[in-house]
Amino acid sequence: MKLNIQGLNLNNLLHFHSVAKHKSLRKAAQELHLSAPAVTHSLNHLEHSISETLCVRNRSEFSLTEAGAQLYKTTQKIFFELENFSIKSSDKENFNGVLNIGILDHFENQMFASAIHKTVKKFPQMKLNVQSYDSDKINQLLIEKEIDIGSGIFNQQSPRLKYSKIGEEKLCYYISKNHPLWSKNKITQLDLVGQKVTWLDNQNRKKSDLELNIFVENLKYKMQFYGFANNLSAALQILISGHSIVPLPEFYGNSLTKQYAVKKIPLDTKGRTLEQSLAYNPSFSSTYARKFILANMDSSN
Image (tube, rainbow, N blue to C red; front, side, top):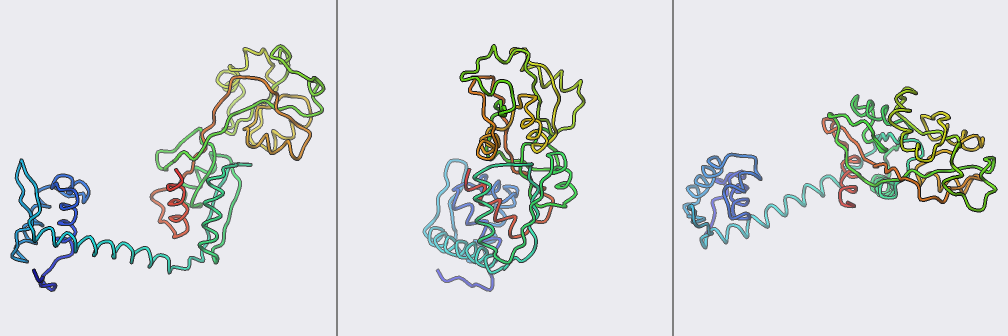
């Protein structure tokens, strides 16, 4: 079978390739986002243009003819090469623009850090701009298309953005050397009775809302509501002062123990899991760098 290349339509070949791959007109139509009649019409047009029957299709059977099997081998090579060409063409783009990233205060995620490292290595001329914001501000900047990617813990999620889970953290109780419990060798749950606790909350909620919805989990230990901080830097200052027990994300809290005289209270307290997410605006035209970092995060899941 020798094809008249000038008479071929690439879309017809693509539609045939999908039909042959799935051995189904219906599945091919779904993949191509076309109606089944449209795919059938395209297949008929291709068969007419090359004067060959490519497949036997009815309600009970679907099979490629000998000519169809030969053409499918050819289309596999064609579309494989085209896909590779697209990737190679993108690789040639030496992205030298700015990748803007909004990140939650003291956010730690090894998967995200690895993706950033690969992106910087991939695009050596790229300018990387990483700024720290609270989660509400990250959402706002993504919606306004001021940043490309946001990473953090998003209690409030916008329907205009896409979020993908990349990890999780647990809240644990921490004290500093200035706290009265510091010198105790073994801290029990009874030791928490009457102790002050400061909550970390980046949603800027009212005190009444915090007392109603946040501190209820601490009632079993009968601790006192002392206050709240809306970012980790403020929480650190309260922690170091020694006036309060401060629940912190475990990754951040453990990193503090290497720099400051603070420690985690070794209690089997009620854990609160925080979901770490990567966020982006799907309506924002992607740069090569953003596409690359999102692809690397997907491949890590």
